[in-house]
Image (cartoon, rainbow, N blue to C red; front, side, top):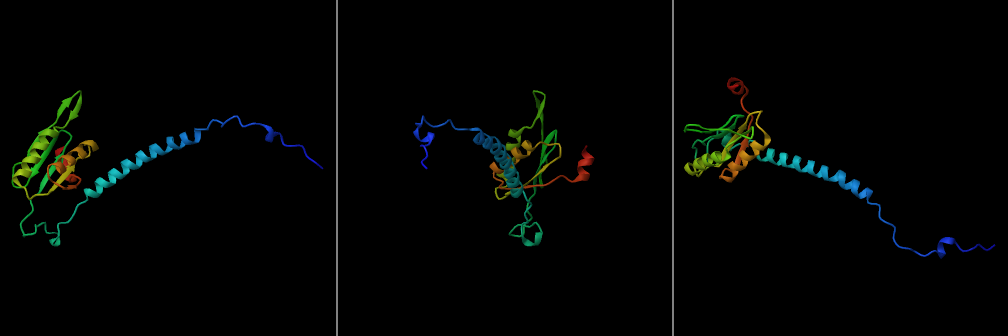
Length: 169
C-alpha cells in the first residue's frame, strides 16, 4: 500500500518564527534582584570580617611588640555628634548640623581630626569605631572609610557599653 507524500514536505520555509523572549525576561527579572541582594550580603560580611576584633598577641595583654602600651583611639558615633577619643589626650566632639531637615554629620571635621591623630602617632594603626543603635549604616561605613583612608588599616567595630548608653540618654 502506497501512501501519499506528506503535506509538510511540499511547503516552503517562510523564515524563522519570532523568538519568545518571555522566559529570558523572567530569568533576568528574578536574577538581577537576587544578585543585588547577594552583593549587599557579601559587602556586609566583608565589613564584619574586616571589623572583627583581633588580638594583638602577647597573651592578650594589649602591649605592643616592644612591651609598650598600645594607645587606644575611639570614634564614637552618636545621633547628635561624633566623638573622637584618643588615649592621653582630650576628646574631640564634632557636632552634627541640619541640612534640609535632616541630621548631617561633619565628615570633613572627622577627617581632619583623624589626620591630626595619625600625624601625631605615625606608628599607630588601630582604631575602634563605636556606633550607637540610632546611627545609620551609611554613617558607620563612611566613618570606617575615613579611618582607613587616613592611615588606620585595622578598624575594629564594637557595640557601646549598655550602661554608658543608658546613662547618656
